[in-house]
Image 1 (spheres, rainbow, N blue to C red):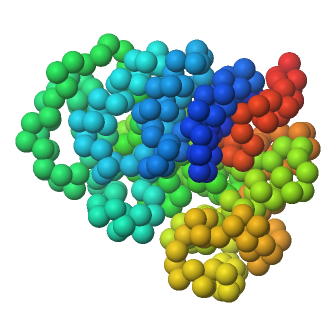
Image 2: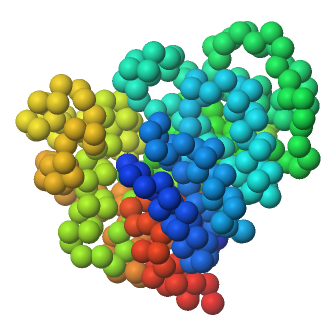
Length: 351
């Protein structure tokens, strides 16, 4: 049975995009908790959005809302550091922390001089972390590295944090079903694509002997509730343009949605994108440039894969994602107190 649209199944990012003042995330998290949302999400960036620092701060100014990493990456922290970070934050939050991993883009790992996280490494990571949190000594030699003897001298009481995996394509979604506690789906997926992803997730869990109902499918939906046209374009079009321009990522989104390869090629053939020579559009073009790029997309793409309009229209659209197979939704776009009207509207439906 699909979950009902309630505030508890909704979460939201704090500090989406570039964070010029990380302290703003504290008030955004407080606002999300006050609005009754179920989770706040941290999308780590390696500049002013350090995951453990932010999550630790949020743990001390909230009491109920879950605090989730959406996402961090396995190769920039040693497994001992990840294990220590995970159990420390789980204790600081009183059991409210969730640790999400992702593969990110190939260009990033080439620039950083570290390997791109492959599927085997992401699978092995769950085993290493869970054994460490279980108090065992771990000897490992594989794609994560060579570790003769890993052990946490102190293992804290209580359940370890759930492990989540960000995914778009079916192989990574299936890995989440077989090894992780849930999948975080990328923005700009249609409800139908989320439904197919949820089936892939649960079928993989069942094949692995796991309870398919215990593995969560978390959809991420760019949402612009009851805003003017300029705000809608900033929330939706400037983000979607960047995602779809990225080689590999944009292709995976289009494939998941059943969108035409030719339409995607036509979108990417626009001079602004060609002139970038493969550089990420969201980091090298202005938001206005990104918005204007969306004129090169089929007009059905963004309305079918985002939520915009009145509060009732947005709530109906979010309900479509739950009906399709999502267990939870991350609201992407509006931030903090700006989500209060939508949360209040959903609360009215709960009654």
